[in-house]
Length: 154
Image 1: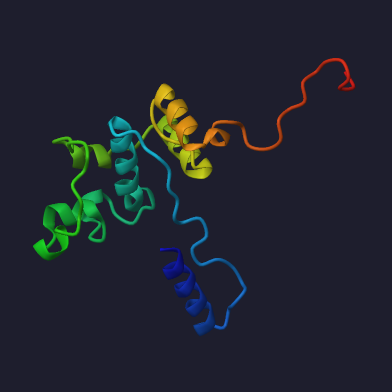
Image 2: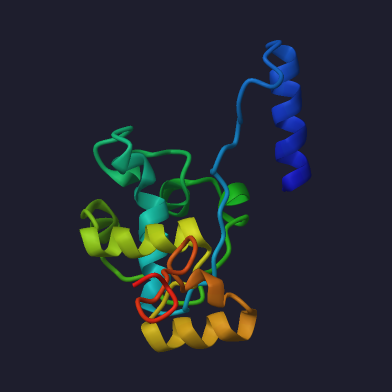
């Protein structure tokens, strides 16, 4: 995927004679580990809600270029390209995807996206981060705060 996006960006800039004037795919492709339970459904709901959140459609099932539309109305030659989910899709999935996510859900998701932090319940996140060497994603970004005390100018 990296080679494909790099090549496409280079050719796009070369064709438009804009080489060196910005990123074509800046921040578009992110990945992080997700717990296979309701947390996965939260991530899938977030992804399938993107066209609605961007005001491109009035309801998610109208977005012809997404997996939600494809699963419901797509031609068999295309639907076979979609993988089965490791968790069951709720019966009211379209209704859930059309419903806005809470600020808390969005904040937790965006933290995982921006930091590469595992997304799941607290204990799972800590165990997974430790086992994959992702402990730094659990700490606050930036330099650690100096502790107040002797020898620190306090």
